[in-house]
Image (tube, rainbow, N blue to C red; front, top):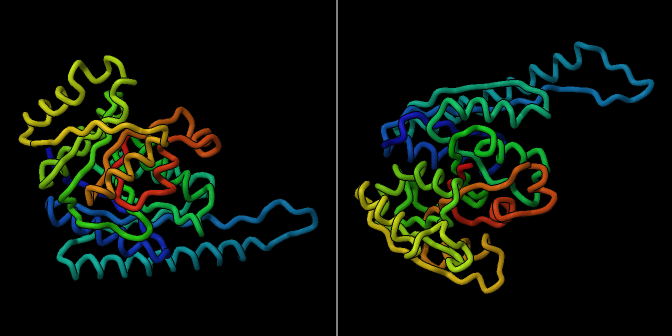
Length: 280
């Protein structure tokens, strides 16, 4: 198993270069094809009574936005080439309510998509929905890079959140190429007594044996939650272990419901300080 086709979403934010550098490092390590996607929002005029905007104004706004996107992509190509990686550039113009759909469609044609954590001081609902679309709507894994930047990439120390669920199994399998390159891999099981027969008689033994058959040696850690949110437990464990990557399944029947009601996935997206590989 390997990563041979990667997609990175870039934009005009300060965090975009760190995201691109992480994607370039992965492409170089796996000798993978890398494409950069810049999404442009189609200009529109909210329906306001008595306001008529000439059509050519919208055309000019669109052309200006697309030209700015092309400049971003050109700088990204130069940055990647300076690091020894050829970068394919992609630009797509869509309505604001279709941004997530466009990203998910592009992500379905890659082994993994690299996106950025929404900056809580600047991002809105649309930014979070778009990031979630990379793994909730694509059927592919997404590597979410914190807005403060990543640690080592490819990761050397990895934490895998394991609860025996379908989502966790998907995330772990998607992460195997990264796990195989890591120096240390820890499988973390929170409150194993509450998971019943989902994790077997000896918590973590089955999944550790599975990974061993892929040549991946792991340490199994059982951690009590102490009543804390599972997301906080995973992030705390990752920080204590100096992890470069957290791997976990993404949960939620509705992305909007996750945003309104919370949930481990939304919680980690908001508070993450280490890159997270999400799969659904």
